[in-house]
Length: 287
Image (cartoon, rainbow, N blue to C red; front, top):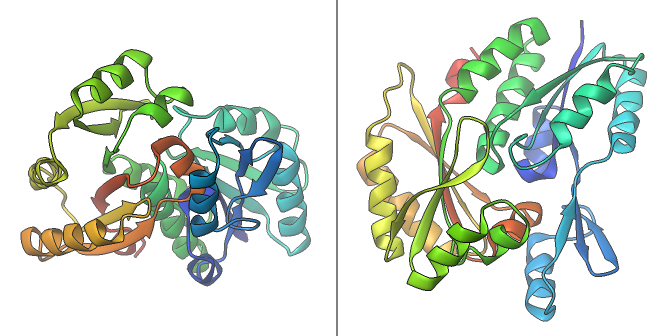
């Protein structure tokens, strides 16, 4: 039994890392007016941010299509894969998972296992890396899926955005919450709830206070296995570095990773957003 792993570009896996763990990454489409760009293929994060600054109208995104998925299935089947585990964006913020579940019933050349990450960015990436490592070790979906569920149950995320306007416009958070946040000039802290939807958790006046709130939340974590903390940012490298240093100080035994927020997610968060994901270390769980 040969098992493949597929994800979307919202996970923002480095191409070398994706190749190392044999993970197929399909691009979400970023749309500026009449121009369309495949995330990570036709446009980089820096190119995206440049266009974001130059365009008055905010961009939108289009999810991975079933045509893209079928093309990936065909290629993997031709390479001798028997099954594909698909780890994609949370069903709470996109209809992709629901669409794939329906579509997969008619796929005949490879067994498809849709897996709802209920998360995005580094959390999604951790799930992919766990599946990829286990597949390389010879495990199949029957063994990998329970491990993915175990990891998913431990994933926590706090997202701090400069403005809620982007999330409001793209429908990822309610108009009321967005209006309330921006009127008070606060730093809203958002989380993914149990259904994988983005909801407000707290509000702080400054990024420093937001960081302390997140440190306090991570301190409550009660994992039997080692913890991994991932710091993600949307073109905020100086702040990202200082947050990484803070987490090393507060949680010296945790593994620390950093990721940029992909254009597909920055469309919704806006520039300068900061995020922190903490969960069981996927490398330990894969053994």
